Structure formats: C-alpha cells, structure tokens
Image (cartoon, rainbow, N blue to C red; front, side, top):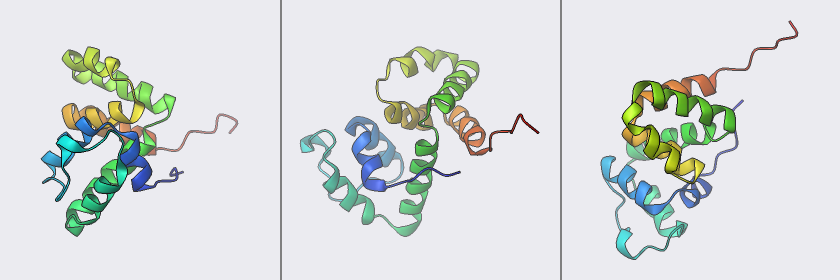
Length: 131
C-alpha cells in the first residue's frame, strides 16, 4: 500500500545539497537561489518545483514517491544491501549520510540501479505467512 505523500514535506526533509544535485540533473529549479537558501526552507523549492514543465515535475514526483516508499527500516536495509552488492565503493559514504530521505535520494543519484531494485522490492506486497 502506498504511503501518504506530500511534495512540500518531502522537500523539507531532504538537505539542500542533495536536492540541488538532484534538480541540477533534472534541469534545475527556476528562481531558486541555492546559495542563499536556508536549510529545509521549503517554499522557494516548492514554488520552483511547481514551475517545472509538467513532464519534469511528474518525473521528480515519481522519484520522490519512490523515496517516500523506501523510507522505512525494512526498505532502507534492502537499499543498503543493494548498494553493498552492486556499488561496494559507495557503501561507506551511504552509511555516513544521516537522514533517511537524504540517503535514499543520494542513492538515486549515485547508485541508480540499487535504488530501482530496492524500489521494486518496496512496491511488492508482503507475503502472508499464515496462508
């Protein structure tokens, strides 16, 4: 079952440096002065996100929804295992990132294949062992 998702909440929970890197790879956010933006200051980010072309906004929203789905301990463990297996050179850096949402979006940027495999795992329903 999908978890509740709110773009403002998601933007507020991720450090600006990781968001800046993510949006730079997606074409950037118009009107956002990253150098003078307070950490977790969400309104300029949200307004910039709303000004994205529809396809770019929908793409970033889909990524953020996957990030949201991976934010539980079980899914984070799977993501860590995928990174360790597929990108062992990134494991230490991943483990040192403090915020769970930061870790997950970082993985999307740096270790995309591990992120996608973990996202597929997160979207599968848990099996019912009583059957």
